[in-house]
Each structure stands twice: as C-alpha cells, then as structure tokens.
Image 1 (cartoon, chains in turn orange, purple):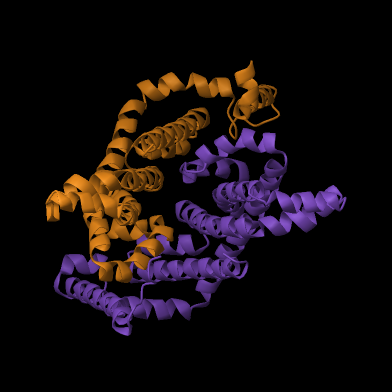
Image 2 (cartoon, one colour):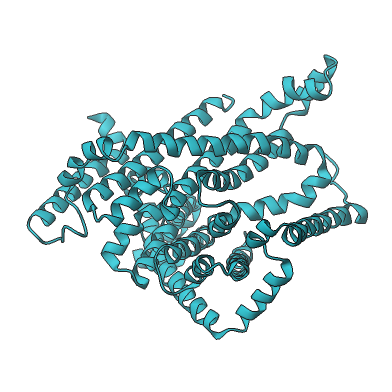
Length: 250
Length: 256
C-alpha cells in the first residue's frame, strides 16, 4: 500500500482504466462511431489475428533488424569520425557545427531524395536510419574522448603505452559510458525514423503494418498495431536507458 | 587555473577554409556524377538545374500559396500544442504530485514515432488541414510540456517565498512569479517543439494532402521533376533553419 502512495505514476492507472471503460461504453452505446475509435475489447480481440495473419513477430524482427543494422553502421562510421574530431582539433573546429546542425535538422524530410537516389527498398530505409543515428554517435564519441581524465592517460604513458594501445587500453574504455549515450540516442532516433519511413513508403515491418491496416479500414487492428508500436518503442527506450545507467561509473 | 585558450587568426581561418574546400569537393563530385553518368543524372540533376528550378519556384505565385498553407498549419499546431504543453506543464509543475504522476508517461511517450498516429488523426479530423494541425500539435506538445514542467520545478524557492511573503494571490503568483521565471525553459521547449511541428506537418502533407510544401515536394517526386524536388527541399530546410534561428535569438535575449 505504501509503495502505491510513494509512486505517483501508479495513480494514473485507475484513470487510464476509467478512460478505457468510458471508451468501451461510448463505442458500444453508439456515442462514438466505430469507424473512428475502436472499443478496447475489440482491439484486444484483434491481437491473435495480428500475430497469426499479419506476421507481427516477423515484422518486429524486420524493423529491429533494420534498426540494429543502421545503428551498427553508425557505430562503425561514427566512432572513428568522433575520435578524429577529438584527435585533430582543426577537424573539430571545422565540422562540429555541421554535425550539431544536422542533428537538429528534420532529416526525415529528405526521404523522397533518398528514394530517387537509391530506390524504394530496405537499403534506403536502413541508410536513412544510419544517417540520423551516426550524428549522436560522432558527437558523443568526441565528447567521451575529450572527457577522459588526463591522469588515466598519464598512467597509460607511464606503462609505455602509446598510439593504438593507449587508445584501446585506456581512452576507449574510459569513454565507453559517454559513447554508449550516443549509441542509445542513435538507436532511438533510428527506430523512430525507420518506423516512420516504413509507414510513409509502405515497405518493411511495423510501420508498413499500420499503413496496410489503415488502408483496409481495419480500425480495431490498426489501433492494436499502433498501441503495440508505442509499447515496443517505450520498452526499447527503457531497456537502453537501463544499460546506459549500468555502464555509467558509480 | 588553466590559461585561457588563445586562438590565433590563422587558427580561426583554417576551419573556414576546410569547410569551403569540403563544399567545393562535394559540389564537384556531384557535378561530375551528374554530367558523366546518365543513370545518376536522373537522380542527381546538375547544380545549375537545381539553381534554375529554385529561382523558377521562388518567382512562381503557386509556391507562396503552398507556403502560406504550410505556415498556417505550423502556426496553428504550435498554438494548440504549445498552449496544451505550457498549460499542463504549469499545472503539473505547481501541483507537484500531479506533475510527478504524469511525468514518466510523458517522458517515455515523447520519443515514440508520432507519424504512425496519422491514420487515427485522419479518421478524427478528416483529410484537410485539421489532421495536419493535429499531427503538428501532437509532435510539439511533448518537448514543450517536458521543458515547462522542468522549468517550474527549477524555479528558485526564494522567488516563491518572496511572492508569498507579499501575500500575492494565486493569479498574481502566476503572472508575477511563475510565468516570468519559466519563460526561458518555455522558449527552449518552443524551439525544440517548432522543429517537430514543422516535421509533423510536412510529413502529413507528404503522406496525404493536396496543398502545402510537403505536397509540393512529393508531387515533384511523383512526376519525376527531380530538380524541382531538390529545390523545394532546399527551401524547406532553409525555412526550418530560419524559424529555429528566430526562436533561438529570442532564447538568447532571455539569457540563454
């Protein structure tokens, strides 16, 4: 009971249940048109159909496969670039503002351009996921490398480490928590962009599922799929946040 | 204490030269690919063609009609989403328990892909401006709410105690203490939200619309007017950057 009182977030749950009950009653009594808003029980009833007929699990696998592929490319390209910005200050002074500007720009709007260049396929979706994911990886790698305590580098040098060995044994491990923050941000923006593009271009996994259901006027199933995507995004966000906290120095 | 880093004039110039050289190399690479590869030429029209398309669009009255529709939808979505975000943020900030109750939901729902809700918004508000404004409002609501909530919670308690010691009414406390104190975080939220509102509105126009800059861009794509599409996207990014710079200058004036 005490735990309930000390966690205000839980107080919202009764109101959420009340809201869903009102939605159910509103749809069943005809106050809310069924084509506009589906009853929660009808949405739940569509879940087995989503899994069996719409290949929900395969679509989750595809969307996350694309997200992780984009993030892996972003790490492969972003960590060396971030290191170069740290190592060569001229590069940092020249390009940091470009990376910051690109990070704030609505890059997803460039998708017609990417369709023209690379065609309507999964590679294009992955490439656009990579493009948004690489920016936080670069910036956070540079920040992490800049933040390595000089005493650690001095200790490494006193053990006669230099160049690549100093990087792998000292600098990189010390910068990992900050670099992971960049990877986490990259994963999140990549997932958001990939789902949005799947929806807009009608290709791929979860985003395409919502588009397909909307075009077939399967309102209840569409609400189920949207709820599922929101739930999976939140879970992914929470999990990566936990890993980030675990990696952070205590 | 470390000595302040002195940047010599040469050091100041080198990054600018490097940036210029990068732009020149990228431009030359683009132009070479465009001129000497007939397949790439379809996707990458020459820079001259893009520049011509840009000027033609700027002198075409139709562009300004579409621009007007986009601006109206973005402004309307900022008003709806901004008022809802600031209102709920102030309420949640002042009623701390309420704020603590809603904050985790808002925090975790903020980074979900909003565009997938577009079919629901179309069912609710139709295929016209309503669904685009709703999408823009939904997109900017979360950053504005989170920023306002954090702003109220970070108000210096001394300011609140001074207000109370002068026996200010709740209304006076709101207008004389809370609102001035949260102005900066609200503007920061507005700046973040504006970018999201622009993206939300334009993506909805691209998805289903017959007006607006998003519609113009996707129409150019669908009719293979690739140079026009590049020109429209350049203009869209320039306008988004201009809007962001405008709000950022207000933010700086407020002491950001």
